Length: 70
Image (cartoon, rainbow, N blue to C red; front, side, top):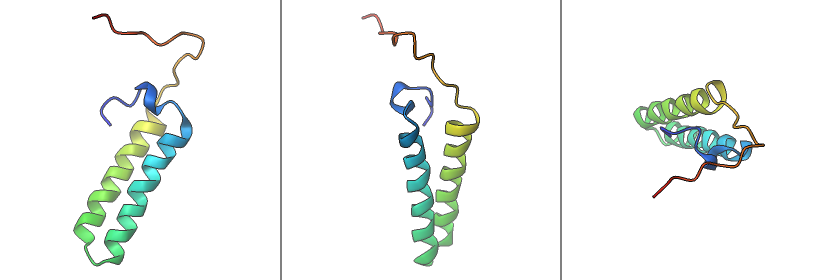
């Protein structure tokens, strides 16, 4: 999740899905009696929310994506 502005993360549903998976993982960990891993999963969810919703900048859709030169 280091490169949150990667084109893979442009669709909103993908960013929401990543956060949802982390939250579901946390619930499963807490329900199974392993709060340490539940807190870790909540940390991942919090970081994903921070990166994908708070800091995320929408790419200009009118510009074509830049292809790297080889």
